[in-house]
Length: 437
Image (cartoon, rainbow, N blue to C red; front, side):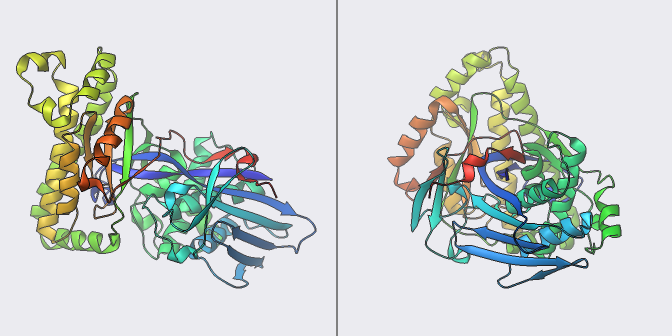
């Protein structure tokens, strides 16, 4: 038996622009992971795959014969499309019965009506009383994590893969992208699958035409998977001592509707949208560059302490003598980049009639800018009411959370206990997913 996992994600910079291959985005992989165990059983029915999700009492069964995957009951489009893609790529003939068990870390879903259980090595899991379709998600990319980890597990079962090999990771990524697009019924930006596969990255998307209309037939899918997709997934990381703090706002947004309205605006007003996206891209790239410069500042240790004692708003109001201590540029540029990103996203929301940064989220983020230790924040991804995402000084986190507890504006916010992950898919200790009887 083997176990694998794939991380969750937050799109810190690049909302909407991530859809266009002309622009780069900054995606942070997070420590909440989707897990999968897999093993074959020589005593079970051949060419049969049993998949279960005990946290949601979900069970799915499939058979594979003559190149066709058939469901034996309840269906799950993400599981089904992943198996179809991998089997079309590998074209196995006869194989022992395969048992797969899916797990998700607590941060992916609402924690109401749950029972806590710990695995043999102490990993915490929540077992839900409701069907998975009735449990609210927190927007961390559970479907992408599921597809990425299931792709990895199946490839590892049927072939030898090296998760430190760029070639093998690209194979996992390309297969998972095809499966995810098929399951969703559309070709998205792909940043969620890319981050689930590669970890924290600066991302530039693949050409959508690569996967448009790809059939689950071996020759075609191999041709597509094994070619160079010319996408960008460069490894990156936040500066040491800086942490991403995600707040679940328990709102709810319909991302497809937000995206469709923005894309319609781009079609209707190409010149106006181009100019706005150009400004937004400049702000995004400034944030990435300024974070890199901040991490290599000669007085970075002193800066961390300074940032933990001052809010973003107070730092921008400092007199010139104090700014000299900052060596003026990197920290001030991080703060101004967040300001400019939010400004352009609000303008885009006004132009398109969408709640990219709704007034309630604006209030929360503005309040955060007055809290010591907070460098800045955004409404991640496509925006809406789901979450806020902050960059904070790690040493100030307890004080930040305590400050928000005293402020009624944050009554609807649940801070998620997440860490940045440098790695994407990885093999896990099997004890993380086994439970005492």
